[in-house]
Length: 270
Image (cartoon, rainbow, N blue to C red; front, top):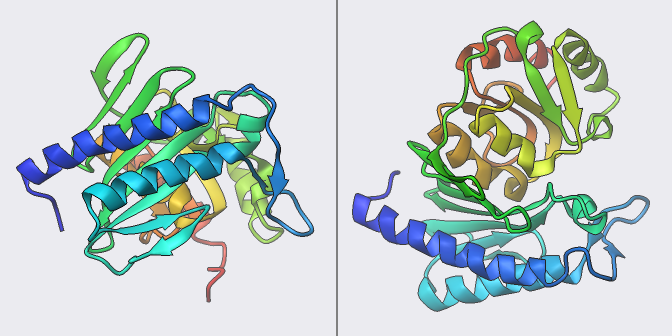
């Protein structure tokens, strides 16, 4: 399902309003003393007051302006999530980067209509950047001005610059396939979180390969990358909206080449 032009325009304006609210909360804590709590027993999954307060601020605006809409958020779960329109929120994607002062985190805000991504936003307030898209178009604004986003041409893995947040994302079963791809690629960068996907949409790199993602990690990024001319799927070539194993590419031909390798890894859900 797509949005009408008038509805899309008003919702894009609202998307920026939500990003403004998130920016205010996250920037009040970035590079300042902040308590870090751990959500994961037997591991490390950090969360801070910035994550919680930003999601509260976004939720309050959605409930005030669109009370009939659903919400899926990382910190406070699901609310009316069977609604025709549902917002998907990751108030600080890249909390590990956030707590170490590295500006590669971002607030992710997405909208689904009948379970399909139709709007997405990545806001990085420290650098003053925003990336947003509708699935058909995508844009960027920042210190150097504003522009339409467009992915770049790259047809083969040996020519590709790839990104992933960390090699530790991959399971023992997944690691050999990912390692083989990394050895074949021209160059690989780590530690990028959501920002790597924005760089695919910007035509600065060619692919992101990751695993273990949740819906709020990827859904808001799909309309941005697709709007810039790229493609996002799971490793089997299917729908990426719910997360899991993800491959995002600027060029569909590179995506096809990567899928030939990634799809050999048995589906974790089977």
